[in-house]
Image (cartoon, rainbow, N blue to C red; front, side, top):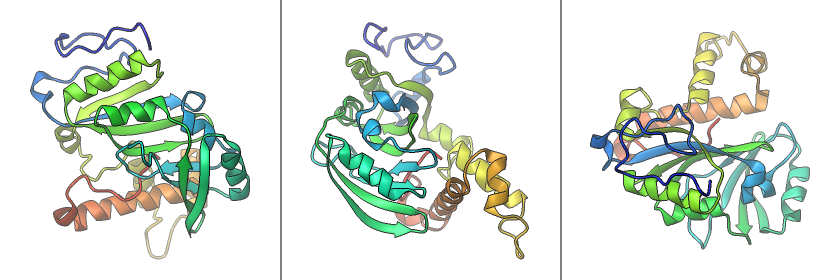
Length: 260
């Protein structure tokens, strides 16, 4: 991204964002002081930690919500799939990984703690510009992030950091928390999670007796049964947390994140 136009708060509302997707538009002036949420992707081979975690087809990885720090960046990871031995062997062979510890297992998912040796430019940039990682998932091809910044200024700083350090991230969406609530995203669901939950309800997965199984629904979404199972579970958890626990934890709380 080096050499691209730097992000300037004085650009007109219809201006191009340089390396960002053409479909993404700058935020309105009245939203500059609001928290800003950014969704972007990066190729696995351009993401240091992603390369270390790259694995075989069918394994889905999700990272816990975290504020990046030098002391313990991205330490917790959920891995969902079948071949955990191969995954662990691959991760431990990477020179940027100091230690990999299995902490817990829930059905077909394992929670790991990872201690890193390397420093990743993307994660460093998020930390240096006061970003908070809300959701992130990845596979052998690419990683998708959802990050919150305190305001428009810190978002601009992050964009400029990526430009200066040749971090080839591809922006998908930019929006404020207010816009997210107005558009019905108050439960914190990603489009993929909402799609899976709606399909499960419409096909009678939650009915008694059950009218459809995850094995029958997964092909409709083009994903594995295991991936759909995690997607539905996490979507259910988000809905319950935002409805039952919202008064105690606030509208942004979440436990475990992904972009599935």
